[in-house]
Image (cartoon, rainbow, N blue to C red; front, side, top):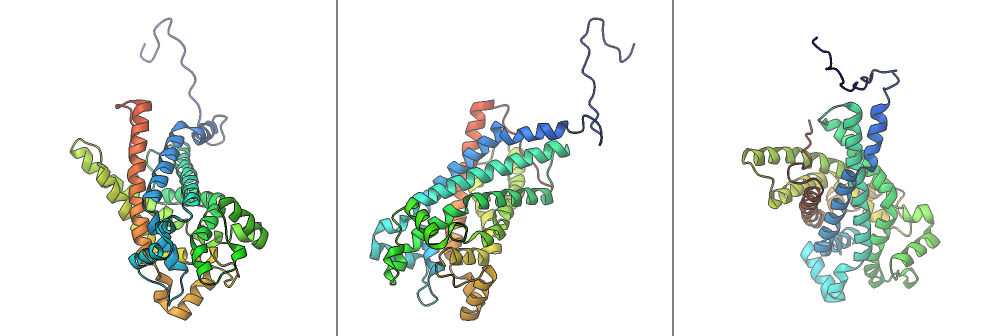
Length: 343
């Protein structure tokens, strides 16, 4: 009869009742939790960390110049290339790489945490919601939550990194030699001793938490642009080129940087505020605006755009290529990870 199995066929397992309140309703939750420890999330994390470390190493002089401009007074602030030239003339080429080790540690750990969390949460959401596509709102929430986790875990490393970059500038302006840091470990110890564990190492955490909007906007814009580029590539029966990934990353980061730059300036000011002149993010922005006008809260944005846009573009290029190669080796050419749509 129709619907009956042939004699001797194995009995199929009973269908699970996924309705609310049923015994099997939690199966998807348990399965989705396993995505947190999946090899796919690990591949994304390793690719993201590799891209970040490679990009920050290539464009690190721009990062050094950007922070010098942001922490300089209104009279001393110069343009990007003038700042780089001054640093080389006064302190040598190695001055542009001051704090590079801590930056590599910070960007590597930050990208690993962010990419791992972001992709794991996306897989969990898709599994629990049983939806193939992710809405823009849900994607923005997942990106923001990943950013919060990343900030709370890695903020101390970024604080140390910023201090190492600007310390020589402070010494030239008559800073106390007792506050000179001899490296990452020494900086950690002195900040904890002189300023306290949480108040010192997490001194820029509030604007950093506000700034989770930056990678959130960046990732959502990137994935929206990526949909268009992938559709274009499929029509031509090919995958996206490295130049296209570079362009996607540049456009996404430019949009995110312009939208959140004042908060990034406040973050840099608070991280080097040893004398506690500012009470918080809003106090920083108000005092800068009162002293220098509205244009003051955008001090150093040109350098920031050069540094972050180029770094992010190169990072996404490396991330996509490393991810592609790793999945190619693990899954083969016909089982590549399918592109995800964002509605």
